[in-house]
Image (spheres, rainbow, N blue to C red):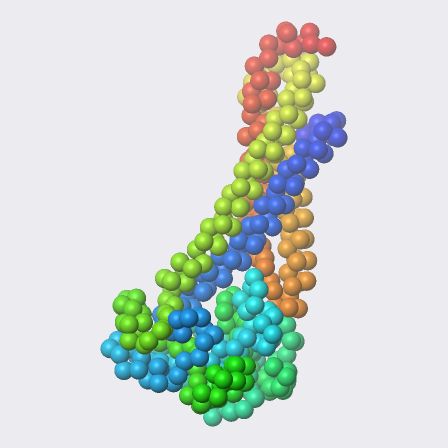
Length: 386
């Protein structure tokens, strides 16, 4: 309470100092939450790709047509345990939704083609998974799509102008499957060939059409060698492995981590200078008071401790307000984007604790210099101060 009373004696100056710290911590919380989301996507994406090879046409990754014969060729290579031919098309024919977040996709596949080699767990939230006997317009939805369209197993929804029965919905994975709609391969083949240019479509047979092949190796340790073998065997093909995924998204994560470091540095400079200025002025105004404490036997350590705690409290209050405002922005932004499946922020407990600790320690460190200066005041000279 005594520290709060000291702060209340300089309301405007203290408020301005707290405001400076608040703005820095607010920015730190918001950017850290965005980085948390990106890092989670990268981590889960790495886990998703770690035990498999994604093969597509080399000219345009995942959009140009391939033939079922390519899957047969790959299956005959040494080191291949299973091959899962697939067709991927955007949820929206006009390409909308393919923005900053993972794009919504319709994926046609053959249930069980992985032969049990898929290790990435897709847990069910409602209903059931696809089976080899499923045909026609049936779908299993990822968690983001299910939430966006507010459906569960047994409901129906429209995809590409057609009505689909929802067989099941998946648990959140924080990566690609959340934005996927799983349908029978033949259904996706029909949708895919309809969106190809007429000259290209006329030269293809829907039943022999695909644009992505998931390959499961016998030995995960030799996955890069197998990927190179596939590219050498299948003409004009490109592969994606866990290592390549990390490399492709590494630049993005580095940029956001650099931004966070920059925000923290700005907070350190602005907040630190504000606290130093406030505490220096406080020492100047309380010189006689400090002189009295020293004259009646107050130890220098006690003077330093009191002023450092005062500075730390300024940092803690600024950090608390900044954390609250940052959390508000994160919640509002996530709720605004949730209907479209675009959730950009993830505020973790660790981020909150770091923000509060950072601001408090910043205040205490910045308060050491004026506190030490106050403790070194000569009591006699301090008592004469006007």
